Image 1: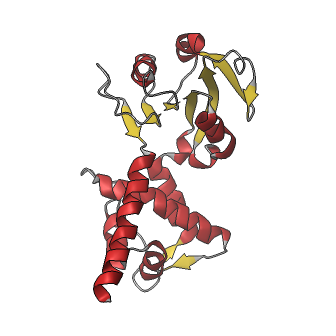
Image 2: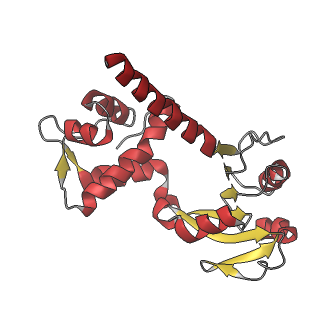
Length: 220
């Protein structure tokens, strides 16, 4: 798959992980080929949308022949950087941080969690899912001695900006932020921040069920 020189829209980029996930499921089911129509039906997209999205990264697949599932999965994985061996650290080993380390399959998404950091003496010096937990006061030294691509922030929102700046100053290239606050970093234009707001997803669901209910009332 060839990359284009033009900038790809964020909407297309956010669909790429969905393609990768669905293709991974198809691969596990033993599917060898799939048409854009069938893939679109499974994902709730049109065949035209899928062809347009994938065309952003070059032409592949054959009309009337479909896509090779394994090849397309590998190439989308390459675009997403899954094969680049990204490293990560987790800041905050409370309920959410603990759950992410234990249950989220970082490795399947191309990330290796190197360490976790916390202020709680009861967890410092322990391991969570084979990941060592250090004190936050050891973070700067760890960043100097290790290449860390992303920091996963699950600390309280009151301290998240300070922790995020510390990560950025230490050379981290991306931040996955679960602190429910929009982070603004100083002198860190190259650091990418992905803010995760659970409430946004829940309120989107609220809107959708309200719309469904309103539509039914209108029909009646």
